[in-house]
Image (cartoon, rainbow, N blue to C red; front, side, top):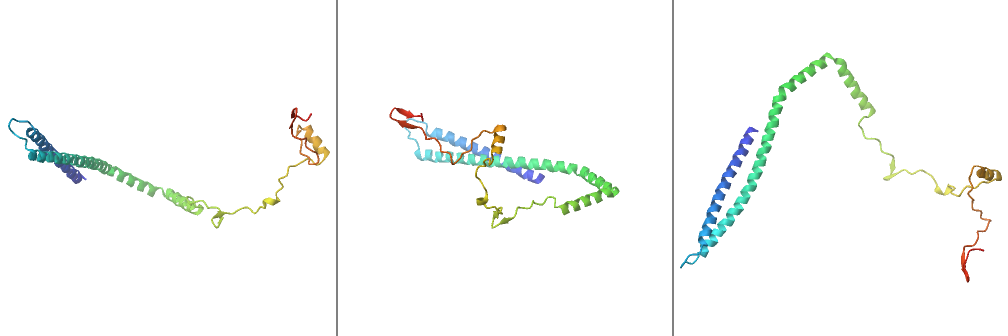
Length: 202
């Protein structure tokens, strides 16, 4: 991991140097284009040199942007490798303590055989009872759940009416005054509209 950090560090430093050189070339090209485009008496501007210098400036700008992207990626890799090295060094530093704890645990288990027997018995009982296994699924036939064998046509959904006078008297005593529809009793006609106005049945 230290070798990886050193390689990443060299990559970042190399990109930093390339960025610095590209910036110098860009500054020189910009100064050159300024001199070529400056107006002078009795002298025509060199359009060919101006075009070439513009092309150099554009190339340097693209190169600078690419180098900045590469430098950012290399810097992130460097930080990541440093973080990994820090975690590794901390783990290595804790290794003696972990090894000591493992040794103490082994000695404790050897001096407490009942704990090993209890753990083995618990694992056996859990395996027999199916602890951790998926719950059984309901029986299915053809991908559908089994339906109850009930014929809905045999269910009586008609309203229940008191059959005797005693039952009707009992209902009235306990406060149930709902009148049940009697098919033998004719219903009054609906209100109609007569010549003199609505007929309200009077």
